[in-house]
Image 1: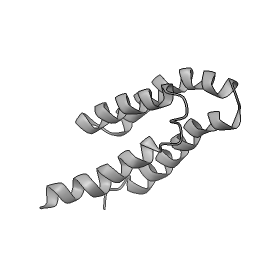
Image 2: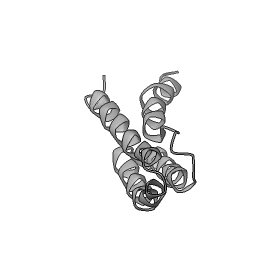
Image 3: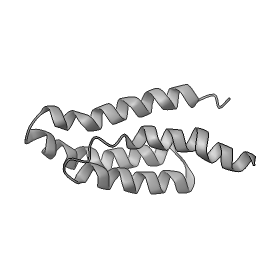
Image 4: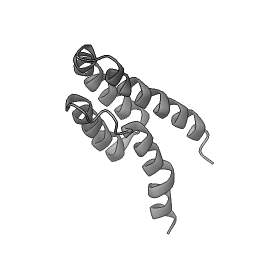
Length: 92
């Protein structure tokens, strides 16, 4: 078991929650996405190294910038990919 697996999951849920906060504040929330989008991309890049982090960082930044896409849990989906899908591909 990866030692940071649970920590990464908790951080992913937290960051997805932060990204979804803009739904709770009409108009002001969409402005906050302009600040959160690049920040979330950088966090994703630091959390998930290599190609996965780069692709997820770009996708996460774009997802936060486009209106009404904040519902996509990008960090959590990247966590699932990293610890389950990618792991299964490499173990075959």
